[in-house]
Length: 302
Image 1 (cartoon, one colour):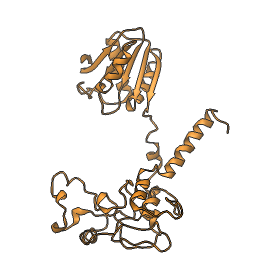
Image 2: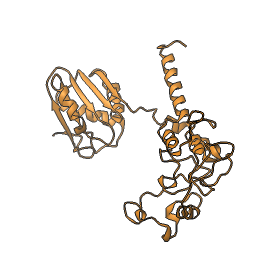
Image 3: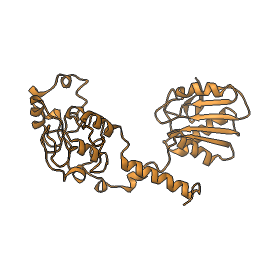
Image 4: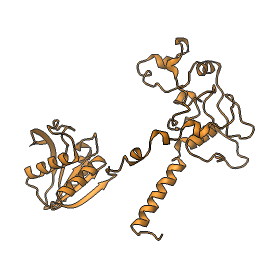
């Protein structure tokens, strides 16, 4: 690695190749330029390439100035000036690096001849967080609160998918010992599993946990119908959530059927379908957004 003095700090960089155009690689948040060296080496066979560590990352020293897109872009410009590069810059920005690359292009348009963005962060990435409040989140009660109660191992008479796994005698004791919103950490010592007594197991605080009615559900995984695999216990009933409950929390329609007529219902297979699925509502919103964008830019007919 080589280093340049930038605003009282040392910025690490590496260069490859030669040419009248310079490709500058700006990496993602929390990463360093070394992750891109194999790409830079290949590009360097035909171009001049620079990969660098933003101040505070990789082997660069911490910055002296406050972190802002403007300051970060100014530090990149200082590096390029130190290297004698003032034109024909092609910026390659990945994730957060894409955001900073765009900032640099906005503030130094005369120096930039190209911009390549790979899954870039944008100023609008947190727009949904700014637009939604906790009062608008769909809770566990909103989603599954009206389903009829069932016992562990029982199948609902009116909906064969509203069925939950049976529990062994010891796991039923554990389920009964788990308070509302609680987990294995609330059990008496004699119910603890050996894995929970080890330091490595103490960090998994949500397993054997119950959901809360007034909160959104946890992420549905392929093991979402088992109490020992996450916070998949019913808020009140002594059991894991049912297939139907897991499917509805993953935004599948209430009457969705995962198997063809006559095909037996397999808890393990259906749980895998649910956990691996892109939530249908998310798929709909994403598709609508893509269509809206294409129409806006007249890439498809309205």
